[in-house]
Length: 399
Ligand SMILES: Cc1cc2nc3c(=O)[nH]c(=O)nc-3n(C[C@H](O)[C@H](O)[C@H](O)COP(=O)(O)OP(=O)(O)OC[C@H]3O[C@@H](n4cnc5c(N)ncnc54)[C@H](O)[C@@H]3O)c2cc1C
Image 1 (cartoon, rainbow, N blue to C red):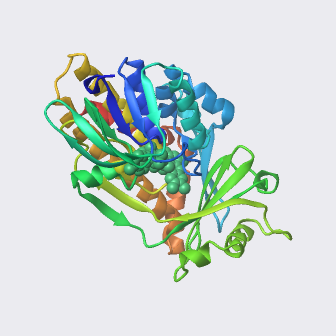
Image 2 (image 1 turned 90 degrees about the vertical axis):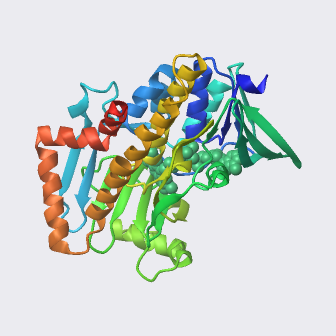
Image 3 (image 1 turned 120 degrees about the vertical axis):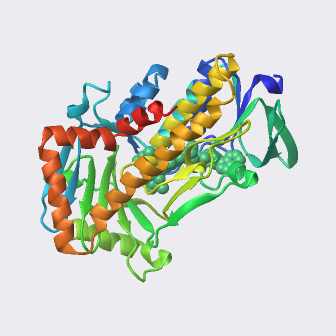
């Protein structure tokens, strides 16, 4: 294949592979360069929002996510101390989406579904165990320096998409700023096969629980619950990650005489950052390489898939002579403010709602949320925003 006849994508995560599938469907050949020996198997994203399900539906991906996951028609905030609930019914937005529910399905299932579909197409190629170490471009081509099997190669394409995650080599080679904050606390996650629903009444598949001393999130995926907690003041990551410490936190959610059956545990730093621009000539950024946010609200991967959809539509238009390269500036104008004003802002609001230390302020905020949930018009507005429909609409309105 001639280099000018393809797009090179750095990174075979959810964003890189969604971009690959969309380009391939537009008839544009794609080469994906993935550093891992195989697709990542990480317990990160598990929530798909309604508009993302709408986007993936024409490719036959949504039905497979539903088949391998769980439909969540509602989700809730809870207050740990009072036990009160604010439940949001996604049926309130059924007039604007074909999928008025969230789907709980791990991102490693999505990437495998995507790869399976891509490998049936003859305009797709993927290299595993191949690491992008640098990028460059001229007026006709963009290229990646790739380290593969002990060899140093240069791989060219008409465009290059950096979908290589938070430590993006593409972003770093371009020398772009990635401003924002890193939270002082770490997020600790324990996964258990214990069935909380047999013991905690009215639990949804997605539960955000506020508390003045230790908030938590309970997320259901097939066969397991994922429980997310903040690290405690003065606690080291090593201390937070011991089995004992995770057991102690789970026992705080629901005391039981036996230890919880733990299947997985992880701890990670949390950032809210955005890159200075998403486009530099023929090199474009999408997903975590361009923006990071805290996971409260499940918006990082969804937002990255929305980037990929916007971007591949523009690459297709330029490829077919229907638009000029100025649309890539528009890509930045449309997607960068969304990462800050919608995604980061909503994720941070969620964190503040959960972690407020002053009990009176926490409860006052919680009661506002209950009021919103119980008022159908207000709940609908809230759902349009939290389900990322409003941010997609806003992005499309930006010239
Ligand atoms: C605990 C947790 C829970 C989360 N929950 C949600 C959720 O429910 N919903 C949601 O929307 N988001 C969630 N997120 C965020 C979500 O996981 C990320 O936003 C998403 O993975 C971003 O996808 P990506 O393809 O941009 O990057 P990644 O998933 O990081 O994929 C990047 C890929 O690039 C490869 N790569 C890296 N460097 C190179 C290189 N130099 N050369 C070649 N390949 C390279 C990597 O191996 C990887 O396969 C969560 C995150 C965490 C940590």
